[in-house]
Image (cartoon, rainbow, N blue to C red):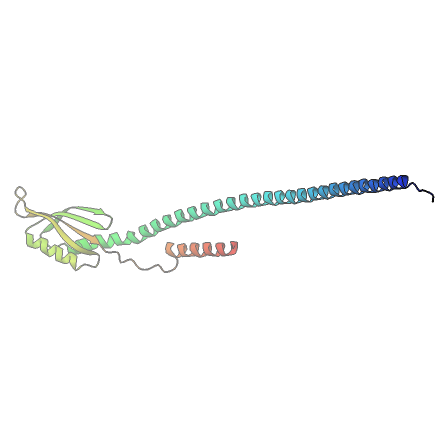
Length: 207
């Protein structure tokens, strides 16, 4: 029976399998490199896109900060303007009132009472004068109490004079009453309301 040597055949099969394994290993390495490169490019593109969005957000945030600063400046200017208008309104209202107050002082002043000084601090009036008697001072206080433009008389000092003849020097205080007519819709108060409405409308439009 002849003998067949299978060693060369097995060696060739082993070399063939080794070659296939190396080819498969090379193909797997190439595929892994390709996948890694594609993933790197994809993630790089995603990072670049996110950086671009972040840059756009920073620009928008700066724009909004600038707009907020402008709005705050406008709000501050509006408050200052309203404060000025309130002062003007107060002056306009007090201008005719002071005339009525002085007329009321003359009307409430009884005979035998002479004023030597009048001082005003806001709504408080301080009267200094001389009266023929303390009864005349009491009459002056009653007249003030029943006045339309003066109220709450308070006697601070009353004393008998010695060098300027008979009578009493006195000091009393009272408060001015504000009875100015309401705004008819064309004054500073109406203008303030229009400013507030315009501000609210601008805020709603901006939203």
